[in-house]
Image (tube, rainbow, N blue to C red; front, side, top):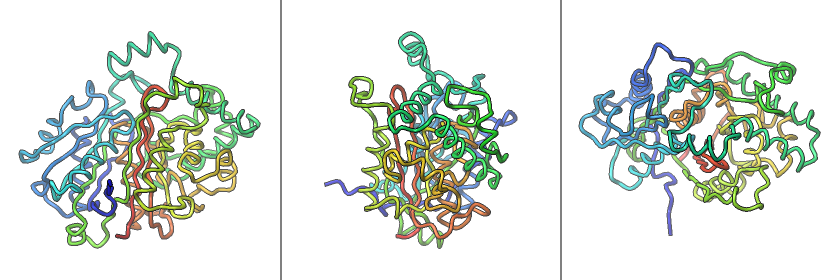
Length: 400
């Protein structure tokens, strides 16, 4: 029977750049910055790294189709470097490859790094995923956009659970207000201004019921993690963070083939979370998880993710939002660093950025946004086309 990787690997160093419009920096500059912080945090030298994984999505404007740019930029000493890409789970996929390599016993100390320079694509939002995907999208699904798809999720959710649309819009606004507040305490966030519910409701409409403040933007950024065996981690630092679970679920496309899917949840998120909880030995996530970083590309995505992660009962996430359950001082703080909403979404970096926040929180090093006495933190990525095809869930803990 599969044993999973619970407590078989630990994180001993992480680094993260500021996210934003980094016109003066290239992807190489961002990689160096994130890697430098991770090395210093771990107290290691570059030559201690035995293998590396690079996560990046848009190779046309970033670092290419292989792991070579990571090796050449960081001057890694003739070690194996693997490039990964799995849509919006790309950063977590690089982390997964690194973790599995250590858990297998193949290496002692490895690197996972994610980077993306989206502002250089020339698009205001996410560009098309290559010529094949782009052509298929234009010819077969010419009217599908990310805001449009998630707007349909919002209207379907409101209808299914009998939520008045204007009340639903206020709940979605409340989610964005929470994330902006948290980002105001985080110097690495892209958008750090506080907003009000009224500002969110009066903002320009993007795809009803999603307004400007319901949508995350794009940005540039990089993040990195150094992973090793637990027995070595305890020698390197007093506060390593242990990987409790790491699961990815990819849809076979059933959501668009059959009518069972009503568009109000994401099946891949539910499946990945269920497997992650089993791997980590978590019986009641609502009472055991201390904080979360979820894939809030849109406010409605965050809302349904609360339910797909089995934190809120089906149809009742709105109540938890209104009662402040996911606020910084709530039962399970969510997006403690500001989330995609305030960091933007440089695809290759986002998963590792989430892990960076949970890592810092579990070590008690998150500053003004520090959660009280956290034990377990969860990260979640969602992406792909069509029908939100891939989801990744990682669970970290500060106790072995």
